[in-house]
Length: 169
Ligand SMILES: Cc1cc2nc3c(=O)[nH]c(=O)nc-3n(C[C@H](O)[C@H](O)[C@H](O)COP(=O)(O)O)c2cc1C
Image (cartoon, rainbow, N blue to C red; front, top):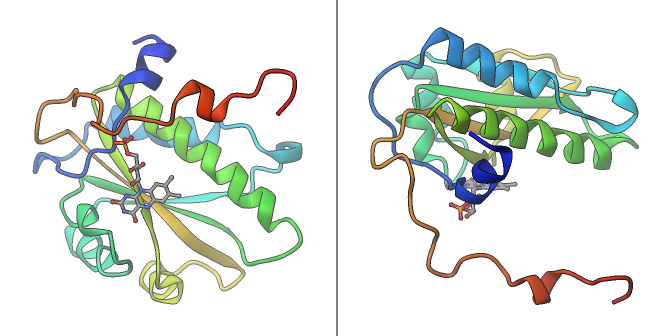
């Protein structure tokens, strides 16, 4: 799949087939995150990859819009250092790693959806990562339950003229 095709077609997928991901697909996704660019090449992330159904179920309760996690085949929780003077860049960087993982997933037929963690302390306890790390974002992955290619959403994206400014505002 061409990169441009992936960018154009990518949609959030929240309903997954109840089947595990191929090991090669899991490795591809995680490796894409590991290879992402980051500010000063700081690579501030740790990725926790979860396939255990009980853990996925518990994670799905740590945010208001995380129901998609319960039915996922894989969830990647992205950890970064607790707030410090680099936090702005940490979240910029992890946003990039998330996009890389999601695009790499799409190429091998795996759907994904981001999720916002509202209860970071619960997630830390559940997954056992050190106190100097925080997790605010996760990603659900799985083979899409519906058609792999959903049509563009009705409201689409903001128009070119609304967001692009050539040379000057
Ligand atoms: C930072 C961030 C947090 C998000 N959190 C959630 C979430 O908690 N639950 C959810 O279902 N989708 C979440 N999403 C997914 C967005 O709703 C989705 O990317 C957006 O609606 C565009 O969807 P589309 O690409 O299918 O048009 C999040 C996306 C981002 C970028």
